[in-house]
Image (cartoon, rainbow, N blue to C red; front, top):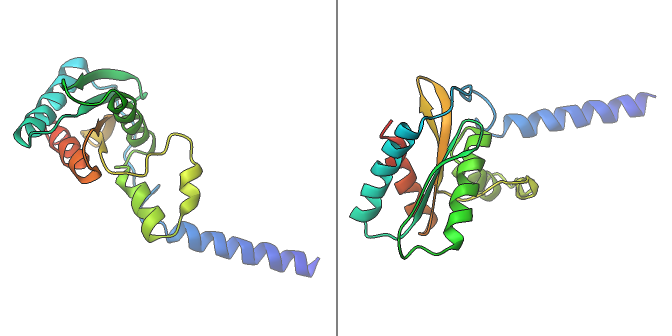
Length: 162
């Protein structure tokens, strides 16, 4: 009985250390708000498209609402067909964790949390951010078609339009 209690205590202390070593991943996230409207989604997309064109990229931009439902999608003419599913998946992932999914990639690379690769729908790459209005997540934008940092720059440009 004493050995079992010691094992449980050691396991609890270990798990507490793992959770506390995960910087801000599930802590202090904003609550969900009302779903983003089509007009606001178009506003976000327009800002992202402007930045995409300024940088001469060919990408797909997906915007989901706070329920992870597709609200708006825009694919440039020469963006690969595969970028559609990737952009939508990225947007859904950012909405689901209410934080830029670059955080997942960083945790895998820098905090040795490869277990996050097993999370269904997780995208451990940059290129998607939640859309926050008045401190509430109203949806997310996902971008695909470039290198992760480029996808992230376009997604952030769109998010800043709110």
